[in-house]
Length: 198
Image (tube, rainbow, N blue to C red; front, side, top):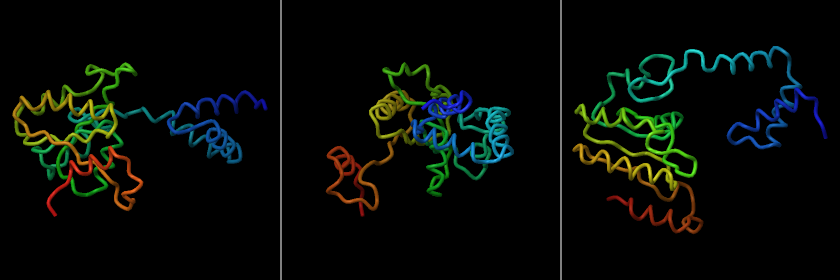
């Protein structure tokens, strides 16, 4: 079925978003069509203003509307501990634990030669400089447990260890609330590696 050009263009643009397939894009487009003009205009205005004033924190590369993000500007946080994540939204995932009181560094990606992402495409130089400047005791590598995330963690560890800083990797394994019988062998292996005293 052919849709009017404006509807088809919207569906095509929505499909470009991560996690939005053809059916989801269609549902969103028709939801917007059922709404009021004011709702659609508010959404459009929010999208068009999205990049106005948004920048990367000069220290950690998190997304902010100031020169320094709230985490870097918070004097109660420890400069001695840096948690490295791949993407800005992962900072919020760590923050939800309410346990981490250190600083962050956002790489904006992970090494992926097949996608053309090498060391030069990642924002790692600022991390190296922060460690070189001293005052950092530990860097926690919290990259994803994927092939790309593991490669990125190994690469960063090779760069950071000669600088005299402790480099650790987040533990991985069986998620809370799941059954052991459904976990794959790699997940169980990682869980055994990351075991701790009880």
